[in-house]
Image 1 (cartoon, rainbow, N blue to C red):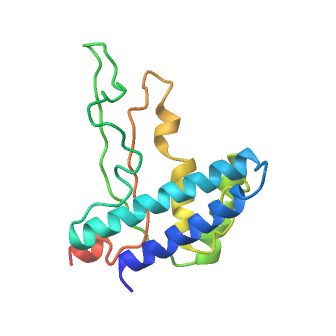
Image 2: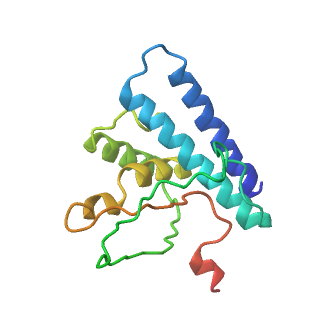
Image 3: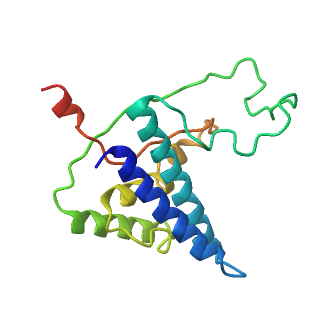
Length: 167
């Protein structure tokens, strides 16, 4: 199965979970946030899979675009002496023990006070997405002289690891 098919399956699963949570009249905030984060992570993974597979963008890019003449809200700092930093990287992993991986992510989510954020950790890629969404390193760095400037993270299944690509 292609990466596009794998990622759309995760997106559908995340949307179904979101719909289930939001169908209630008063969803618990932790459940609502977790469901929203899961949909966003799955949508990013789907968009990246499509982009990598055939170069097309994704259908969510301008979903809520309004009049193009409107000025976008400024999000960058205005001070001229602000230093801008960026980190780009890729880390690949092999899942050798899915049960141990799921258990680790579940325990980490509980440590973060989000035990209900990852309702189904049996899929290793979904578990990784949840962990990255809620425990990324930028959250630990901001507030120490840094302000978050945004991020875009992909986590999901890949055809080959970097090590395999270099063979």
